[in-house]
Every structure is written in structure tokens, then in C-alpha cells.
Image (cartoon, rainbow, N blue to C red; front, side):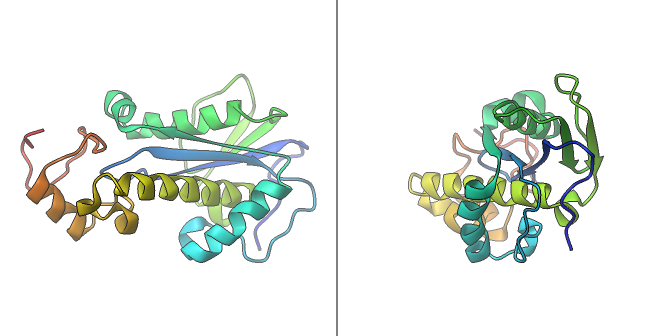
Length: 199
């Protein structure tokens, strides 16, 4: 069973990101404050859920949440500040959009940076322990997937609709054949044998 709270604060938000290991597209984060007594028997870490279940949960989370927000940090910014900093930035920007502002933050993973003096706790595998982090992981994943499906229309040969920008064999083959697009992260090793990819 996922726990509803970590702290004693009423307005505790959970935050998580999606797309950190992708070769293309943004890293997307979400932050969610759930009401007291929120329960859902399906909700879990988004990686444990099917796409159908995530799509089913998204409107429920958005309807029931006290507040929620999501943020894309795009490839040009990822390339400038690196993927870890971009992931933290996406989470921070999402938290700053929350109304009301949270009194406590719980973060999936083990890295975060202080934000506006709000106390926080990083929790490894937090998305499979706390409801608000699980809810944030579902929103981050569904909003990012929707974006990848949209840019798939522009570059269908990479099949982002299916692989969502992750380094699948098919995605790497397409990079080898067609080169990199404006959506690819130039700071990432796009091909395993790559020394320098002609961009």
C-alpha cells in the first residue's frame, strides 16, 4: 500500500520526472498536492502501470488534487546544464506553479536542490512508496508521452510514438540512417560507437 504522507504538513507535494534516459525530447516533471484521505487502488509508480492505466488515472488525479502542475525542460536547456540539473529544474518549476504553495516537498530519487526554504525529503523509489509521488510520476509520464506523440508527426521515421525517445534499437538505427534532429539531445551519446556525430 502506498502511503499518503511523509510529513506532518497539510500541504505536502510529491514530485517526479520522466524522460531522463531519453535521447530526444524534453525531461518532464510534475508536482502534485493530494487531499487528505485520497485513495486509489490502481495508482502506483508509473513504470509499473500500462499506458491505458496511466491515461485512466490522469484525469482522476487532476480532478482530485488540491493542486498539480507539470513542466517540460527542453533539449537545448538539457544540453546546457546536464540532465540531472534539468530534471531538478523541471521539478522545481512545477512546484513553483502550485497554488497553494506546498509546505513540504517529497522528491522521487536522491537528488534535489533547496527551493524557497521549503523543507524537503528525497526518497529513493518514492514513486512506489507515496501516493503524491506516484501521482506526479503518472502526470509527468503522460504529459511527456503526449508531447513525443506530437513531435512524432514531424519525424515519423524515429517512431517516437512508440519508443518515446528512449534508446531502443529501432531509435538508434533511425539516428544512424537519418542523423539527429533538432529534438535530439546533442550532449547525449546518440549512438553507442559514436565519437562525433555529424549534426
